[in-house]
Image (cartoon, rainbow, N blue to C red; front, side, top):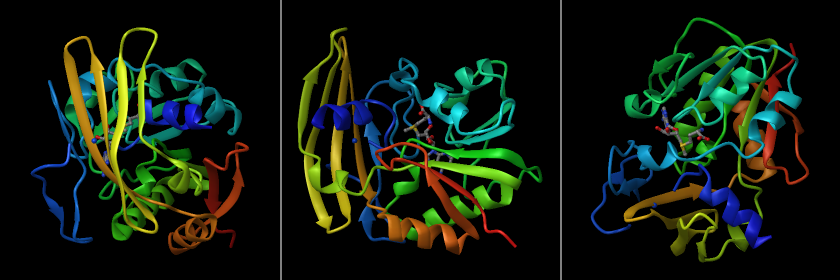
Length: 255
Ligand SMILES: C[S@@+](CC[C@H](N)C(=O)[O-])C[C@H]1O[C@@H](n2cnc3c(N)ncnc32)[C@H](O)[C@@H]1O
């Protein structure tokens, strides 16, 4: 179980060194942030690190949950780790991210540099995808804005797919220290639980002599909270598309 959690954290999650950091005005909690070489996104992700990552079955899982050729709006697409494979699987993808440095790694795909919250493309998609645990922001208002964007951009009959940590992850997760086969190191450290549903931690990655950290705070979304948040955005939970209840498919509320 810890292995599976470690794998999830090595891959794009919201991640993190707590020292001098800003406080998020809406929540009075410290903001996510990152340190290390190269550009770092507003939410603390290291672009050069993410550019080294490859997919781990996520595109196939998403592809299997939607009709062949379905159009996809991917929110928080990063370097296109998932995007490029979705295109290979036959989907037309529009990739959105607030980091131009992340988007610069995406090739041959329409990209839009925007915050998710304010996105207004005036177009609808068969699938709106919000993965990498971005939905677990500790800021409820921001979560509401994320889901409203999903709702604004999903076609009638389409789906919204979200990736969240299963609720029990918040109780089970412990510090992790691993050296991977290719010499990279990964640590999850400085875990704290500032409130029953909140987890704060720092993730640390090294590749050779490059070292990044990512401080993050995530909020548990149990099934009930998830359904309530979806309902506020006029969405309903349709199914979990995996046994872990990590991947969630929602649809527009039927009329
Ligand atoms: C953890 S990375 C994951 C990237 C990609 N989904 C993947 O799996 O490789 C999260 C990405 O979401 C973007 N992001 C986070 N919050 C955002 C927001 N509010 N608006 C736009 N982009 C955001 C970050 O810039 C970053 O590129």
